[in-house]
Image (tube, rainbow, N blue to C red; front, top):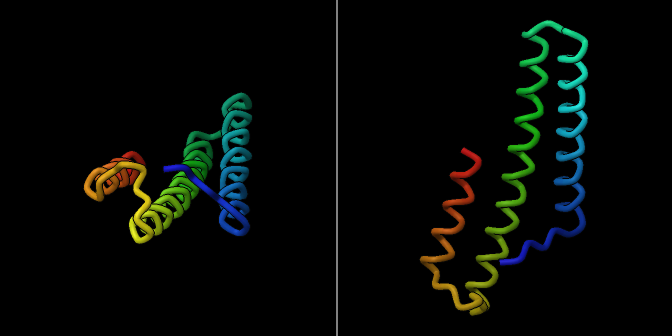
Amino acid sequence: MELELEGADLKAVLNRLRRAQGQISGVIRMIEEGRDCEDVVTQLAAASRALDRAGFAIIATGLQQCVTDINSGRKNGETTEQMRARLEKLFLSLA
């Protein structure tokens, strides 16, 4: 299954990843400056949420594409069960 992000989906995922990138840079800077542990952890949690949301958006797009593939009969040799198992593994990787 190839991921095809377009338009608004692509923009949303890239924005979330850029936000996480900025937050991670902020965490690094905070640690280097010896900032308060609570502030560092709060910023790190925000970066983690941004990455999770980007991952879920990517998986949702992949799921939509799989459903389209199943409905159109293009499964690239994969059974429905194999496709389901792969998607479940992807979801669990973000849990």
